[in-house]
Length: 494
Image 1: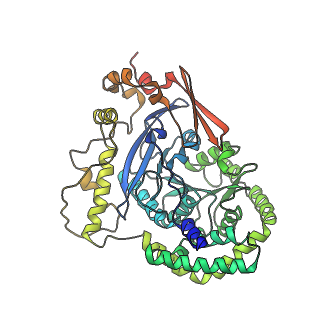
Image 2: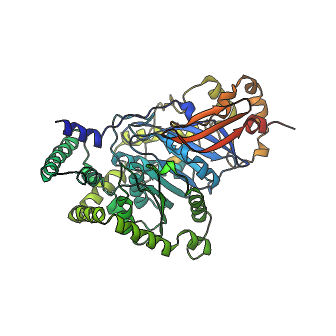
Image 3: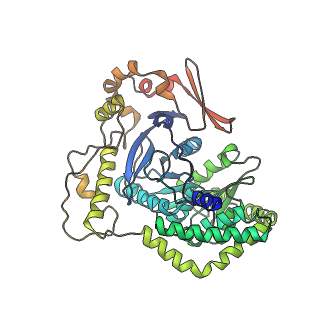
């Protein structure tokens, strides 16, 4: 009975990684002579749960600015993105992170390790495309977040790059590789298979989803965009052979491996960060496949050399997974059909349409807040993006298949103000001086420049504030922000 409970926790429930919203850092950031701001918002998913989201953008961003969507792992929260934020800011792109359902500050009781998360990510992609008019996306996911990114990339067309941090080929196969490879007796394997059958039946009956459908390996074959695999040789959660098998099945795409040689988790070692930054810039800013820069990043010879060396090292594990997936091939079409039916939904009723419109309208109102409203929002310490309600909505005409087909109607509302930062340069923001003039004296120094993740240690003195990226209390790298970099100082008139 204990193993059954352990299995239920493995598939559904992990300790919720809650945090204080202040840990997301300052609203304004100054990084390498560029200025960024963070906008917090709430997006309601199809199940009616509110997802806590953060949108980091440069001051002068526009529709052509690429957006990186980061999806965290099942037992974590969106604070993970702060550990890689400096890599993405160097790429001069916007960054969108969010707490998955059942994690962090979002609603929901349990995590499905890729099932509900894939639907939510697909909705977020459509939201950013239709509301913010973003054209180019990069998907970066870790563990279950990588699974969601794979499925979304296979079903959505505007993805330019896929970054996968330790994905697993299938949820059931993750369990089998975790427990079966460590099993000492055949009787133990048989017992665990019986438990797996009972748990799958229980989850399907009570939580209305089949863990067998979380199988991203059947979607990777259709992905032809450049893909970066990040693995750790000492990873105790997802064996590196999972990423190796993904690369083996993804035959029609340019691929590259980045490996953390000496650490348990990939974020303990940033030896690959410069290469990763170059790779992201190469893909996002117009380098063709035949260009010299592209060929240097996605070196085919270096890739195959590393691939075969890893395959030889993990030969037994590789054949074990290959055997499991081969047995599952007869279910491939059924699984793909079930996933597409769940994610690529159409509005079937007026109630479902109204629910999505309310979610979208809340997000639009939050995204288009003028500077006076924003400063009042900050001073009062109110929770952003909540307590907006729509009194009524009258529907007429045919229902479009587009997720937000009525966006033009909603954005014509005169009460919705324009984004003060969009398409603006810092020199044009002098009108912020009066708004923030009285705030500067009232703000505490610790609130201005703190940029702290869940696993960060914060050190400060009178003029300098330091964010130290840590894992298991080991200092790996640091970013230093000076008091002179405060946005209020930058926006002062000379």
